[in-house]
Each structure stands twice: as C-alpha cells, then as structure tokens.
Image (cartoon, rainbow, N blue to C red; front, side, top):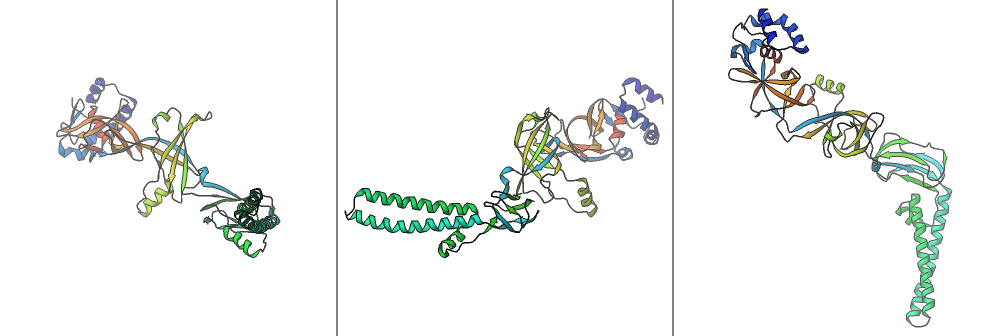
Length: 402
C-alpha cells in the first residue's frame, strides 16, 4: 500500500485511472505476488521477463495493414432512381377485361400486363384503313401523272399538284399508323390489320421494361379513361442510397467514396450459429453530394449508386451504412482490446526485447470489435492484443516496488 501511495503522488490520476485502481486493488495482489520485483516501468517502457507475460494474461499479435479506413457511420434509405421507374397507363379509354400481373411479380419487356376493350381503338383502326386506301388511290394518280409529265403531255403545274396530294396522303397514313402504335398495337398487329381489314377493340397493355411490379392501381371489370394508371413497375438492377450526412462532416466526404452496407445483427447471428461463411460485403459508391441542408436535422443528402443489390436490399428500406476512403498513409487494424486510454490519448503496447513500449496511436475508425489506428509503425511490430489492462497498470506504476 505504501508503494501505491508513493506512485499516486508522482502522477495525477484521471477518472479512468481511479476505476482501474479499484479493480487492481482486488486482482493486483494475486498477480504481483507471482512477480514481486521483475516488472518495472520507466517512461513509456515496461520491462517484463518473457516467462511472466503469460501470467499477466497478455496475448501477442501482428499489426494488420489496411488500404481503406472508415470515415463515418450514417443511416440511409434505399430508393429507386427516376430513370428506372415507370407508370404503365392505358393509352385509350375502355373496359379492363384482364389483369395479368400482381404486386411483386417479375416481368419481361413486352409482356402483356393487362387487356381492355376500347371503342376508341376501333375508330382509330378505321381511320388508318381509310388513310391507307386513300394512299393507294393517290399512288395510281401519282404514277400516271409522273409518266404523262415525263412525256410532255401535261403541264408541270398539274404534276406538282398530284405530287403534293400524294405526299399529303402518305403523311396522313403514317400519322394514323403512329397513333395505333402509341395506342399500344405492335407492328405485327398493324400489318395484320392492313392485310385483313378486320377491326378489333381488344387492346393489350405491355410492359415497357424488364422489372418488378411495385404497385397495381386498377381492377378487372373497371371502366377507365384514357391515360389512367394501371401499374407502377421498376427495374431494380440499380438502386440509390440516400444518406443523411451531418453538415459539419460533409467536408470529409468525397465523390467516389465507397459505402458499405451493414447487415442486420440477426442475420449475422444466424450465420454464426450455422457456421456459414458470410458473403462479401455489399458496397456502393457516392455519386452526388447535395447543396441543401435539411433544417429539421441539419444533414446534407449524399447519394450512392448501388448496382446488383442482393434480394434482401429493397426499395424503401432504411439501413445503416459506413463510408470508407482509400488510405494513403500507414494505418492498421487492431482489436479494441489492444488499445489503452490514458489522459485522453490512445496507446498500444509494442513488444520489445525487454518487454513492451507504450506507443501513442490515433484511432481513425472503428468497425465491430476492431479499430483502425495510425501511428509511427513500420508494420512489422508485434503488439499486445490482449492484457492491455495489466500492462497499463504496470506502465502507470501501480505494480512497481519503488
């Protein structure tokens, strides 16, 4: 007890040191009775014989160099890019006779989503056929007057009038064909109509993209107006992560930074229980930093592009993310148990020939049970990955014989 008092006068104790003193008052007698005079500390050097390291519960390990360092943890929302989302609507008014897709169904481009009967479609087909007939008649007059003009039988004015009428008929026929295409008829269906002259009011509504049905907005048997929405579909090959960055941290984030998505804790626990290896972490890349600060929470929107998202990442989901950046300097991953705190600073204990040296480090990020630190290391050092509490006690002089 005299030793403890003398050493207490040498260095002021922080609150953490006081708690450490209380814990060591219980375990220190058992430890230091085994090595009453073989452990000493001078400055940042702790001298411990090789055979006493195990008795202190110290385990050794290597520094693990890292090429990327974590910058920030932030929540994000999974959203669908505007270019990947479509509203499928009825191009004509009519009666819905059939709906082929339900919410969650995967659909292919060109697949029929719905069918409806439309009287307006019948009128459009009739006008198309009439324009086609007028064009055929105009074609005969065009060929006749062309021949007569070349032979010098008719005046140039008459030939110009005939040619103008023919061009107008061709434009009108093309217009009505395009209207049928806009209405939803395929090129094959229009060609069949032109050949058979058989009108049909049945209109097929097809998917413009390959994707997933997100919402159904109509029911079979309902009579709808033109442009009434039927389905909302989306291509989920690309998603956006809308990340809320505290405005005071936005200067630390750059375009191109990598974003890691954290798996839910329950899923990680299930993988551990089944002893299955976890998949590669899902990552995205920041493509935009917003210019507007949300006045409610003082955050700035950062957008990250996520390609090929797994099935458990869904639009509308809120998820935790970690932004990481390439490391241009020396940084290493160490267990959290290897780091000791003293007077507001962080230290790790580097193995030396005489024992250990308390080396200051800067914690630049944390992830799970590991921390990323930087310091004056070559990378070849061996450190204490466990037992930092006992080493810190000796370093502070709580176990010396002065």
